[in-house]
Length: 257
Ligand code: AMP
Image (cartoon, rainbow, N blue to C red; front, top):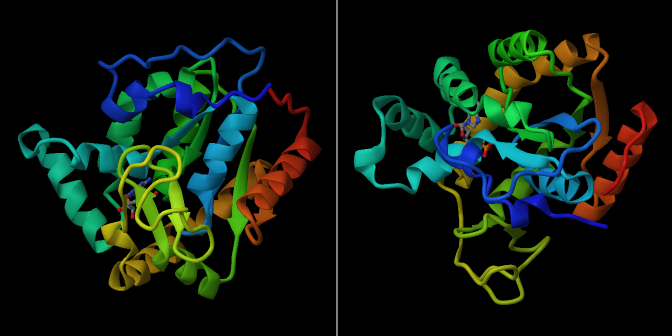
């Protein structure tokens, strides 16, 4: 049976913080899957997180989605730290570690969740990875694996500049690679598609530079912890997902739900 937790569950706690309860409490599984997805912006981590969550039942947790959800709320609800975070995001720069960790820490129930998690876009710096490692150790939680998606830079730029996202359900399309049936309209929910501000050319350059400087060192960090699995991010989303599942299976038993 295939269960799409992201469609059934509004991931309320992740999107809105500790005071909000998720619409669906994930079924208890014997050993929840806990993964981190690494890779440059545009390699397709979000798409893979969604596909993996459909197969494995763990929630897709993206820090970028948390910032975008906060940005969609009324300005009077924005804390000074959030306002500062939006300014970094618009430029394509990384939000300061203390702000990001504060947001993840507030949602630590998601890391404890009996359904497991697939982290996408977090951690993105060594400081964040060390904070996560410390928290997981203190709370006696283990990571199953860190998947590192690899793709040549020219393909990354093509993917980012053609990406379009649904305003409502956050489904991701591509103007040439995965176009919607009706231009500008989401196939899944009919919502309007838009281009993220940080997918504009000047922001793409800043984001790729931030990735090289701050995030690429995490590959070695997780390799040393024997958690790293590298996967080629070429081909269709389904082919990449198959490759990911095969890579994860070689690390240990995977139960597809
Ligand atoms: P994403 O959707 O993961 O590409 O994130 C969009 C933007 O949100 C990034 O370009 C950053 O400005 C910000 N952001 C998301 N996650 C993080 C993080 N873990 N650390 C710093 N900034 C982040």
